[in-house]
Length: 310
Image (tube, rainbow, N blue to C red; front, top):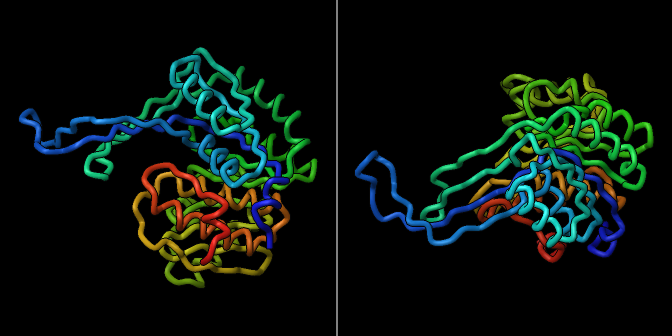
């Protein structure tokens, strides 16, 4: 079994849609006279890395070496993202596109509950994405595992080429998918859809056997080595060639699921890059996911939390 020092030798390349998570915290003591909505008196604000940047942050927090490749706008939010990444000592290769606004998710929190989320986003230009693909060709050679974090914001236009090139070089490719077109992920090593995302592409199931059959059919159709489905309170299910392994959920108290999928794929990637097998990597990812949902907003898991006593 791996430990914290082993993780420090792992090298992971994260590519995908980055975003800035902003939080406005305040007190709620009355309802607006203008509309039946709560009035939040904002007392403080906070900014955190989101999307693929949160995946990178989680990898770095575990002590592994992480390089992040993405696109941001030439705006204040983009500058803030760069500063946050530098503070986390993440090797960030951010291509700037003056034609887009950096993706921002603004959450308004009152009484420790999320009341509202406001999204700001535009898709990057084809030119900057082509330049990013060229840099991917250079960076992928020096990593152990590639993570493609797809949030559907347009940053992974060339994902098929990235998967193909990484696999040609013998690199494992882990994908956090989005949408209902999984054909673009064909040939990846492993996909990590959650239960709702899996249902969107495979349809509903009537029994556990039906669920297993649909999962194995999708794995074979896409030519994956493995398919890991996160199932909330039902834990996780890992499908490989004619084999399925399950692990029970570990969350003691679910406080906030924001960014939990980022933590799961980050832990999985770090463990695999450090030489762990699939089942043990899933166990660690499941434990990390159980820890992070007990925290507010996009958060991280530390080595002491992950490798401490069960």
